[in-house]
Image 1 (spheres, rainbow, N blue to C red):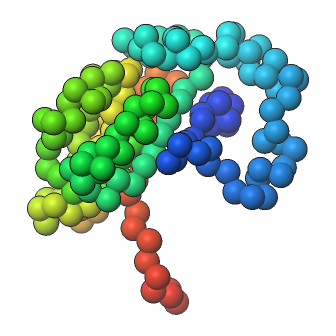
Image 2: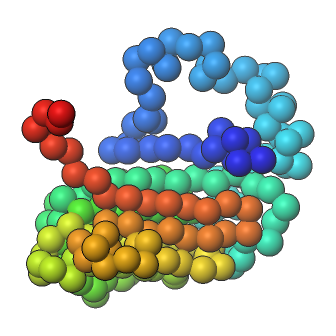
Length: 183
């Protein structure tokens, strides 16, 4: 069941589908009538764009296609000034994960831009103001949300959100890249 759900998720970053060169050439990722028909049969019906835009108040459907976006914004306020939020909102995703938000609360000036996402959770660094941080925005109310794993040793930097929905758990983590060689 979990594997099937992961195949139904559309991952988009910077307006482009996320897929490596090798994956793009793979027959598995090429859309075919047979694969589309299999999705319709497995999910009961095909989710339309208009269904997403109308929003869903809950997660009670048996199965549905979820559209999710994960984006490292490198500072939510700076991202908003560059109007990066317009690209995200135009994709009409059901769930948005933002990494490296660098703020302790949701900016009021972005409230109207993300009005289609009534369920917002922000996790921030308890150690340094304006450092790290993640946010989760959802059209559908999660059953439960965890801000980290529950251990201050790991949670002080505000790098993890876990959200429970009726059919899956969403785990969003901001893990910085390090050029240092390990070992």
